[in-house]
Image 1 (cartoon, helix red, strand yellow):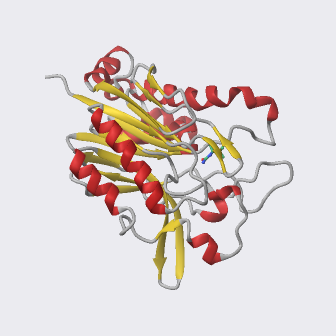
Image 2: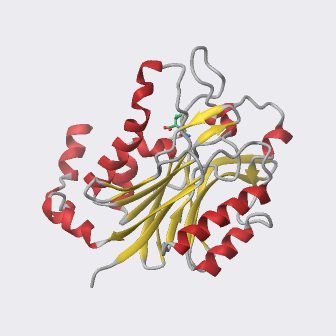
Length: 302
Ligand code: CDV
């Protein structure tokens, strides 16, 4: 019997710093309703979907910084989104800044939660590849994720939800082959990715015309080389003065983009994904169990 799932990539236009959480959650619910109306049962939202992409700023005041973080997920402000998932019978992944109180200390992570169609949190992923720096650097676009987030400490978990094996990744993770390889060795059939990617980088203006190519290239290669479905959602448009790329998409295990957002605003794209394609692509080229040689790779690398 063919196993299928209708996937939705829920792109968001900018989330300005002036937007309140209830306002943003309202937008997310609307996107989820559009996805469900189109028949989707699994959706992905962007990285840091609840706030502006605050690592573009140097923030010294801890009280001002804490405003961007969730001390628990869900909480009173985000619970309506999980209630909507249950009402609409649709699972989703969403990125947010997570704060964990560890005694007197605060641990901070760039996190994605996976919620099932019952509106229950199935698990968390914490971004492994945290880019940028702790302090602004001359000639480089300010990107202070390493000031505000510790690298993830949960590995690359894969969750069983609603009969699917789902892995998660956040923004810069999508550029690294390890992300897809680890998730797929852990059994992922679908990888859900959220991202915030500036259109222009001060350090490499000559690469500006390749921003979208370098967005899709690693995700298409990751999907193809690991025989997995990928759904990726951008936060796009002019957010607090910084232009973010869009290009949210759904990619098949063949490496083909099967659905693509065309705007820089709130937009939902969906695709009816045939999970049988994973096995087909594996038979054609990537029968891991038969052809991979991890014992030999190790000997060569060490
Ligand atoms: N949020 C990100 O991880 N952004 C990175 C870059 C631009 C620092 C990215 O790979 O898109």
